[in-house]
Length: 129
Length: 412
Figure (tube, rainbow over the protein chains, first blue to last red):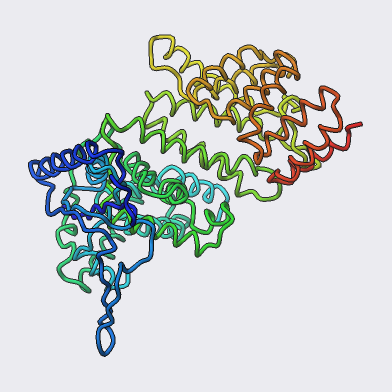
């Protein structure tokens, strides 16, 4: 099994109802996303999932110098930001992509699928492969 | 080295490369190990066979040798990092289970190389390397990029396959249709790259067309019941059959109507026609409706069946374009249909249809080529000249520019 991060991206300055036209549609997407989470748990893919407050609430910290530098806002200036994510476990990318498609439909946003580092990939990196 | 031995090794390389790489990929689950070990095994063959002779079962010899090379490499790496891969060294215990509709290692490898999660240019490069057995230098040369760039592209694609766990398998029956389409698109792009620029002194681009046809034959071997697979192979054969007649001695493009039909390759045409007939009977027997490659192959069958350009059955061609427009109403398909309409209903009718496509095709050189030709036939010379100028400006290769320039200069 491989572990994947499924990140949900959305506009930095969200419209009144996000990607939706009405409050009803927002509520429907919450319901759909909840049902999708239940399915992930039931079928054994679920590790963790959550939504994030808007990127405007982020704070960036650089602790590499003598004392930490604290900056208001997200690390990258961008029109779209991470809005939430799932962490799943799946046998391969085809399964992960199929789940991402369902998650994307449920929450109404684009989903990026990215594998987590593994012990093997870490070893390969250290050995310069 | 004796010429016949060189030819034998080349033939074995063409026939066995994909099989050796694919078998090793199944066993070791790693494209890098499989590719490197296969390359080493072929290098060993080139060293040994001149002295020892070609073994009776060259494929088996290569697989055994490559497996040994792969195990050596894994052992070396295992000493460096003891936890790794110990189990793999004992024996080949990977089950030969069919986890898709068809069980063939090569087919799995094709689907892995053409996975939709890889960028299209990475799919082409990986397919040519892993299935076609072309070197990175050859692929880089064919696509006019630096060898380091191509090497990086292939390395990055293989790293993604490994890290993201892109599966090494034939997709499920439910997904196969869509995924075969992606595979065929890759093969056709490879063919087109070789065919479009197939003139001049650069022999390697002709090799690309040959390579695509070889991949097409392999796919038909593996998926004999897929109509589009057969259609694509037929299309490539019937197109390639005209290769020798496409460019004049002075390096100018020769259009279909003006080609010396005696220079066409008769055996490729016969093979292509047989495949088209096979598809026609399958469709007539209630099989699924033909897709784009089958329709295009059928059009090429109509062209290549005519002993002279004047004998071309244009109503058939237009009927086939009508079916193609029904599944793909894109402006390019409609432009090509208009070319056939010009033959059937005259240039004025065709021009009216072509002019409606300008909104989408202004930057597409074939649009201006078609307009120029239709305007010329309607004796609207000034407009034709302007259209030729624009087409020459946009045309990619010298043979076509030479042809268009002459047509323009002949206008009065």
